[in-house]
Amino acid sequence: MCETCGCSVTPGNVSLAWRPVPHGTTTVDVLGRLLAANDRTAQHNRAHFDRQGVLALNLMSAPGSGKTALLEATADALMHELRMAVIVGDLETENDALRIRARGIPALQITTGSACHLDAHMIHDALHEIALDGLDILFIENVGNLVCPASFDLGQHRNVALLSFTEGDDKPAKYPVLFRSADVVLLTKSDLAPHMPDFEPARAERALRELANDAPMHALSARKGMGMQSWLDWLHQALASVRAAARSMPSNEEPSHGHGQRMAR
Amino acid sequence: MHEMAICDALLQQIEGIAREHSARVTRVHLAIGPLSGVEPALLRRAYPMACAGTVAEDSDLVIEAAAVRVRCRSCGRESSASAQRLLCAKCGNWQTELTGGDELLLLRVELSKERLVTAQA
Image (cartoon, rainbow over all chains, first blue to last red; front, side, top):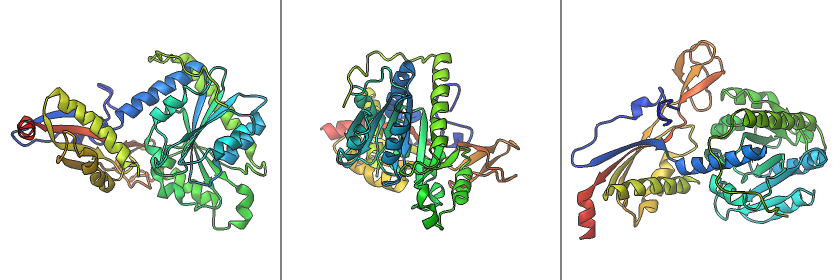
């Protein structure tokens, strides 16, 4: 990002920024992000999270990679240590929210209809229904989709990408936008690894590194409780570092209104 | 297919600019990189639908493709790369930072007041 005015023109793309224009027209230079409105709301959401000391995580994966199962197992493992809440995005049904609430964790379902992703405005609306006060971690379970969710900042602190052993190990190369943004990659359903000889974790990791992403990669099975500790440790570290950052760098945006007075059950 | 949502965001911005200048939009220039997550071909198809009935109706959409470029964290050299392999072209190191290719930018908007008068007449 340009340090002078905050626009998105970098040395790599500056050649795109200036071109002659035909006569007879007025030209207005903008040089701004196309999703500026979404990004502003995302920043506002992040200010809310920072103020309440809440770690906000955006979980992204293909449908059926085990996002909800991971949240169920995480709830079971951490419910006596940390207070958690979940915002779940799905095209239809309240099924995932019901599963999470059954574990004693407040969950708010956003049904997007035909929309293939969550955006910052949907999360902002949801924050009126979720109590952030006293919360440690807010999980945002995005719509199962490896394409669209990657383009929309929600205000999260970290991105969590899931890739199951029943998928292709070349998915980071096939979906570079999403996997490039991941802060941790979880290889899920690792209990099925013996039945899935074609999936080579080393190949998945190489594809991730080729996206210049040094995010840790952990194999786990939420259903069988295998490999969960690395993930739980990562959560504790992320929570500690986000809280330390929020304390040392007070947000310059002060949310002008309160969120999180009501608890959705 | 989130290109319609991208178009809506674009429309909100260019409608505001057109209102400020009391003019119609004739052409819109975007820069889109392969790592933005937006497919230019789908955006081109969605654009006329999103513009129908607005001050940008019948306007041209010009999409300038941005190239993927990386700067090596080890040798410091900048080079071009592909979206799936963001490696340094000189030393092959994968620890690079992106300097171009994830753009999703509104570069500029061309406006015409004449067309507004014609349209309202």
